Amino acid sequence: MRTLKSIILSTSLLTVSLLAVTACKNSEFLEVTPRSQGDSQIALTTAEGVDAAVNGIYDRLQNVVLYGRDMLAVSEALSDNAQFTNKSGRLANENRNIQNNTFGTATAAGATWQSAYFAINQANLILDNIGGVAFADTAQRNRLQGQAYFLRALLYHDLSRIYAYDPGVAVATQDRGGVPLLLVGVADQSKITLPARPAVADVYKQIYADLQSSIASFSRTNANAPAYGNRQAAQALFSRVALYNKDYATAVKYATDAIAGTIKLSPNASYVGGWRAPQNPESLFEIQYIVAENIGVNTSLQTTYTTLVRTGDRTATGGFGDLVPTTAFINDLEAEKSATGTVLDIRRQLYELGTAGRGAAFIECTKFLGRNGTINLDNIPVIRVSELYLNRAEANYNLGNTTEALADLNVIRQRCGLPASTVTGAPLLAEIMRQERLEFGFEGHRWFDLKRTGQNVVKAAAQGGGLVYTDNRILAPIPVNELSTNKSIQQNFGY
Image 1 (tube, rainbow, N blue to C red):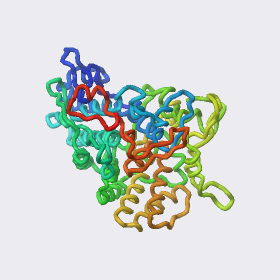
Image 2: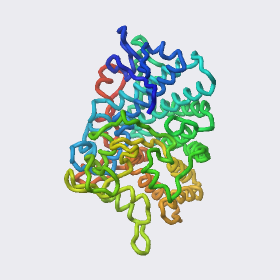
Image 3: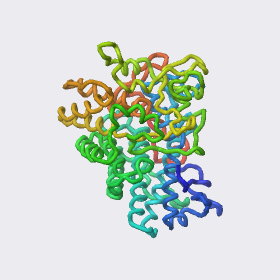
């Protein structure tokens, strides 16, 4: 994806989830192509070093425990959208909501927490040092600075929605606060701190500040979209964050700002085709891969979601198809039909019968089907334009602006081949939430949408029967290594 990469090759054990570089002489912060070595302070004294360090954060987002798989697939497994097939055994425990089987825990204990905080520390080091670096032009400095703020905001929001209650729906007797805020880079062990968990409101305050700084740093051209953070993506993320925060006026403002940007909603005729292109034309921000970064047949999104190698061909078996749509999800996609019985919703075309090469065939999600032309190699949309309309619809509904909410709902419905709706009152909100579920099926939204709205997770008995919202498993456990090192942090209730 990128020619410059920043990685950590020698680190101490994770302490307070900081990226603590060891004091040994051969410690490296950067691996640059062509190869260049040095500690973090040396690496971040040049424009090339800062650029490499920013690229390193994107590389971390590619990890299986972040956007390579878990931020999407584990969310679907935990929610009511998906059922496990047991063809490899992967994600079965997550789908049953078994204690301690959640984000990153099946791959490595605490891996999601650790990977996210490593990336946050890289952003912190960039922001600490960028002011003293000479750049060829101000635009480059601003672009890299905007990306560091944008990525830190994204990561803190992801950590918060995994490990903490969302604003307005906390279970008071079980609430242990947000996630630790680390805002100064750690380049050596002397900089390690042991912070407690702040209030969730303080975490959101920091995310707001980062997004405001990001938007102010970016130009209006979106020249790097969607492979890199950009102004339109930062506005869109702000609309998402504000919706979680129940700050509906802010959610409307930033959704509106982002809708006015250069990347637009795909029309009906090209929507399905957009999922077959290497880069989804609706993507405001996506994680992009090159062939050498292929996650492979065990844990890529393609192998997780489907046995198919290519759409329409059931003669060739590729992946495992570990996680497939529930019957209820498919029935909902097929609920609206023409007078002759034809399914109206074009999104149904993104789900088709898989192969029998690894056992019984299921209807599978084909949003990720080696779209880069190589099996198991897919760019991952993190934020798409359609989210803006549904964010704004939900926010406007909660503000009492039901006419505006219905108008945005119908933008999505009609794009998908459905007739305009005329619902009002509570059914309007229910239809907005339904469209959020169908539009973002298998893109990692559903678990978080249920959680941020305080809803129970309803599942069949074979999937563990679901969870009531007050169940402790709504939150992931804080990693044990973190607790053993930092005595200021409280474990989440029930673990």
